[in-house]
Amino acid sequence: MKDCFLLGYHGLGNIGDDLMAKSFLIEKKSFYNKIYTGKLLYPFQGVKSLNGLRKLIYMFLADDLVTTGGNIFSYERKKSIFKIIFIYMLFLFRKKIGKTNIIDSIGLDLEIDKRLRKIIIKTFLLADHISLRDNFSYRYLRYCFFYLKIEKNITMQPDRVIRSKTALLKQYNTYLKCSEKEFFIWFISQPAAKKNKYSLQITKDFIINNNIFKKTQKGILFCQGNEDILRANQIRQILEPNIKCDIINYSCNEDIENLLSILPCSKFVVTERYHGALLAEIYEKSWYKLPFTEKLDRVSPSIFLKSN
Image (cartoon, rainbow, N blue to C red; front, top):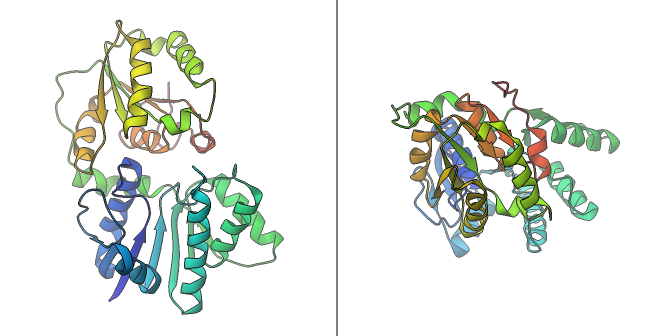
């Protein structure tokens, strides 16, 4: 059996990437002898974490390199330039020695610099299998390959978390009885919000002008790190005292079960995060988005459920 190196942001405090990795492990674990990955902030069952030189060796020499996670090719901060260039060099080396490069459930960030976009396209040309998670990314990449007169098999499938809905619900058997019914969940993203200088005013207008909050007594603000907590406190000041707010800070993949135990009981979902929308769809909840990032504009409440 082959070995695999899983490249992504799982194990680093992001519930979307953790769920994508868990989905991959549920579906593909039996296909591989061992699955390796990089340094993790917390244990991740099913993968072996490697550091330093050993990580680089397995990353470059494993039979399959599976790159997954929506932001893996995104420009989020200045050092993202080095990440994008490194992945291109990684794919290039592996291609030359006959290893398999797989891109799985990726969405392209088309707001980045044109030069970086060209590097990303070149990286995709070095992939043996490509699966994109949204129609916008799919059409753009198909256009690029057509323009370059290159024939390459590209598939478009829903995000890996959506595709593994049944398996995830089975693993996290979280349809529990809840004592509270009148609450909502808000997926916070300060990194997304700070890209829009009017984000706080947009948030105030959204809360004041939306009737969904008038019949709700409690909100759960779901954060992923200290940056998100700062924004959550701003939102709490707007909502209180009419709506009592609790803050949950996601710190390890064990928190997935805690979130998924309350999400089925929520009245609706507000999200600034891509996977907040997908989780709302999985649990068939009405959801509303604050699209501070372009990728959330690619999702509409119609995968399974129409928002009302």
